[in-house]
Image (cartoon, rainbow, N blue to C red; front, side):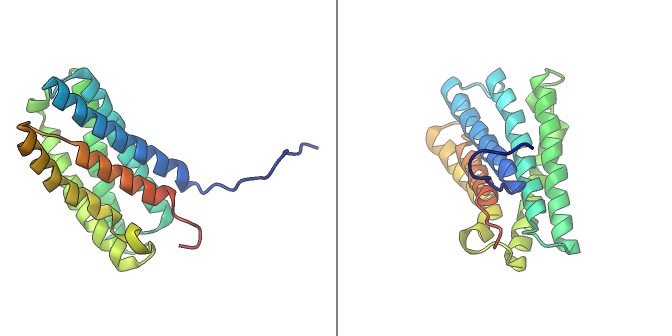
Length: 186
């Protein structure tokens, strides 16, 4: 008979997904810092970190789905589906750019995926607020991305850069933390 020494720690299946979303957000923030430091929007490190960000965001969205914070109704499912498809397109786009299939400025997927992520996160935020599965600040976590974009534009203008990106990375770290820190009673 096998026994485990020490206490058994029950893990929620969504916790690792939340941590991966935090890691993806960190990757995106670092990509922004690399872009600012080098002035190169197509730096190979930025491309690889963009793939990590999109995959981390997908993990966070799967965690949100597992927790049911957007509800089980049609609106929540559509919101989650739009977000997942959009971030999957962003991941594919970042992977193709990293593989030098095409240059970032030639990407048709970029505009479609980024617009989809905005629409998806807006819908997901509305569903999350309406369902009341998350309490307190977590309920508004999906809106962090929508708040981060104007901050990104402002930071880019202040730094005289094309894009800054760290606020978007911070938004995904917050969303990932919301997924990771959700208790079984919420």
